Image (cartoon, rainbow, N blue to C red):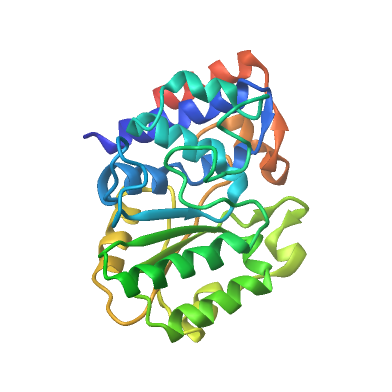
Length: 270
C-alpha cells in the first residue's frame, strides 16, 4: 500500500466529512492524519468485519474533537461506507463530532472531556496486560489537553504498572482553542516532563512526515518495561493552506463547499 496516497485520501475525506455540515475542528483533525494512516494501515491488528474482536489493538483518540479524521481513516479501512461520512453530527448519525464507542464501529473509547480518554487508554492497557491478549494500545493526546492534571496522574500510573504495551502520541501543534500553548500554559520542556514520569520518549521533528513517525513507532514497539510517549511536532491544519494560515483560529471554523473542493485539489497535487 502507498501510505502517502492513503494519507492524502484520509485528509481529503476528513475535509469532505467536515464540509458536509460546513463547520468543525479542521486544524486538529488535519494535524494527525499521518499518524492515523500509519496506525490503521500498517501497525494496528484490527478487523473491520469484527470491530470488537478479542485481542485487537486499540486506539484511543483522547483529543476526541478530532473525530472526523478518525472517521475518515475508519471508512477507508472498511468499517463503514464512505457515504456515512456525510452524516457527521446530524440527527440520527453514527458519527458525532466527538468519538463515541457506542455509536461508531471501530471506536474503542468515547472521548470529549479532555484528559479522560488517556486515563481510559491506560486502563485498557492494564486490562490487556492482565488478560495477556497481546494487544498494543495506542493513544493520541492534544497538547492543550496535556495541561490537564489527569494526564499526569495517568502517566504516573502507567509507569508504575510497567505498561510497555502502551504507546502514546502528543499532537504537538502548539496551539489550542484560546491561543498558543506558550501563551496559555506552556508545556516546555515537554520531552523532559515525560521522561521525569518514567516514560520512554521519542521526539519526532516533523510529526507529519510518514517516515519519521514510522521509525518512531517501530522503536516504541521494541521498548520493554515502560510505556512510550512519541511527541509529534505537527502543523495545525496541515496540508490545507486556508487552515494552516488561520493558525489558532483553525481549531474550529466554517468552510464552504467550494473551499472544501479547493482544499481537496490542493491535497491531491501535494
